Image 1 (cartoon, one colour):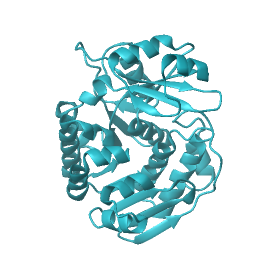
Image 2: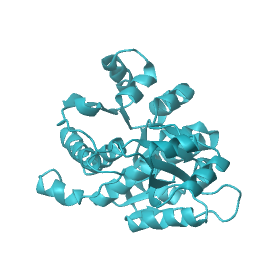
Image 3: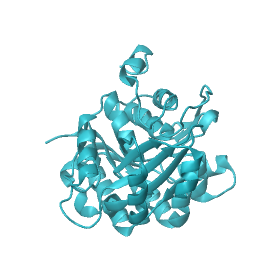
Image 4: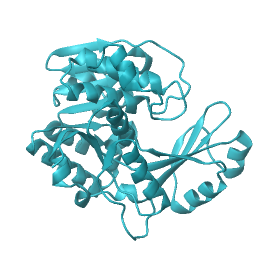
Length: 330
């Protein structure tokens, strides 16, 4: 039976990317530079209007798992796709990236596979229109004890908290992982997601999580103290390991060893999409290897830096080779 270094659970979303100008966005009624959820009819209209489409497997935690797998972890992803063209593409692409896509595509049913239609403007702005489809229906039946119970690290995507069945799947995955001796953590995902489910988020973190990873806005949304230091202390009081990314201001880690602040070299991003996802990939790689906290952060920062130098949320460089050459990984 396989033992996994890292297992993620989250939305399985195909990113469908095309170039477009502002006049096209206006014509299609697309709001520039934001992510918005769309219904199925709207998704089909936008998908049909895209030319020269480029498709890549996406989803925040899926991006993290793929990045960690590229660094050398035995990794798997728990997600839900349908056996349509996009779903079959997604499952194969994850496997091709070296990540076990452990649930076979669902046969039949009404909901299609999830997709995010991304329109990239000449100025680099990305306008994202996401149809969640079948991925948001993930539930406890999708969480196999043979996978969750054999994970050394489990990473959960906060977005799935928007449905009760997603919450139930989280609890099953977290408890099964911990019963097997693994550690569980969550990507907070979005401050607005926290606002919708604050009490449940805090209960989950306090009772089920070993680590939390989020950016400054996400961490501050949990307790709303209007002071980052106070918010970090409050989260650290209920969770052993708290990792807060602060963009160009570096990373703060709260652990039993105390507070650690690690700076970053500021650069102008080509595309900031995926920076947090790839930071988590590098950090979790280091955590799985038992590295010191500052080393974990430096690996995460290096992975985040690479991904913001190009379009797309997954690394294009051989980060394992680069990190080995830099002496950051063995």
